[in-house]
Amino acid sequence: MKLFTIHSPERKFAAAVLASALLLTGCSQAGETDSDVEEIRGPAVSAQTSLTPEEAFTRAETFLQNAASGTFRASLMSDELQEIDGLSVYTILVETGEGDEAIAFEPALAVDPESGVLYSYYPDGTLTPASEDSIWNNISTQESLTPEQQQNLAQAAQYASQISEDGTADFVLTLKTGQYAYADSQALYIGYNGEIQQTLFHDGNEGIVPDASTLLARDMNFDGYEDILLCASSGNVNTYYYLWLYDPAEGNFVAYPGFEQYSAPTPNADTQQITTYERGSAIDYTQASYVWDDTGSLVRAGEYKVESDGSGNVNVTYQESEGDSENSFTVTEEEYTAASELMSGSLIDFCISRYGSSEQRSFIFEGIETVSDVSCYSIMMTESGVGKVRLYVDARKTYMVMLDEDCDGTPEETVNIND
View (cartoon, rainbow, N blue to C red):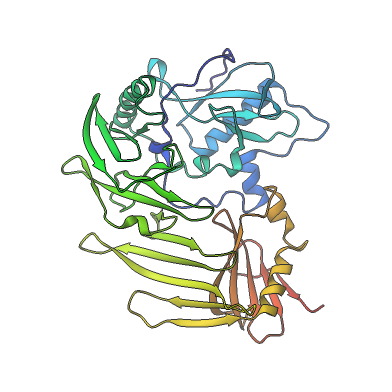
């Protein structure tokens, strides 16, 4: 049902944060092609055209339908432009649930009528391009919350609001079970029906402020239940988390010891694996994948390391699974420089400029493979963890590079770097 109403711009967002209940595992591929971007952002707006309030609302409503059909309702907060974070935008309230049980979802949305860009609008008054906000890219498009889950969430959100109002915690994570969680520098607290069920102590997380990016609900062991991650430490690149797994038989959470050694753990429901990524320098990094064995322990399923040797060469070591022999190959400084220059060139600039920055680019070397009857180094360029362009560098050192712009494994263009 389409909802189009006007709300006072002073209306406060509800304290409930339902993002945890709607996030799925894995990385979205949204934005890899122009058509994908249009599906998320909508078609580009002409420089001579300014969106009306109704058009801005329609744009937001379409975005929500594409993100998670049937989950959200949108309503325009005001038909007047609001000055937020240096931009004049129309603001759109986002809600989940029906009638009196409807709860505001954070973030809301905002639309720049001049550019047509859609933003996530957070309660602290900041705007983030919605296409870059993982909260939308990871929302389920396959599943909808059951009525029971909706009811549980509404109940959990009510208690979360009370906890926030009394100053106990600034951020409270709500779960599909009706439980809620908040944390401090000493422990994770699990509540239900207004009472603390569990106090789970940890080894500290000095300097970490629990919020929607540091206290997370993810199904880490792929049993269909949300588990809880709490950021243990975070540097400029690497982030580590404590993990508590949900025990459905007991209805409580159990710590998984040592999980905080894994950097940037990301569950993938399709492969039933957890991938990790740890960077040592601008070039050096380690990426690995892990699976759960029959005893409920994580076992490494594969790993590769990319390390510079000080002379400009990049050494790549990879291992299929724990206990297997290691394999390695070297990309020379000349090869690496040539590939880097090509990636920064006009051939693929559209993949970078679409998001305004290339600072989050990284290269993933994946060994020798045969493509179009040529043995090549396979190199994936990623941005914010999402594959953007794959290059195949000819291993015969003739510096022929095959460019695969849609990452489907079939090169669309061959480029001779020496030309």
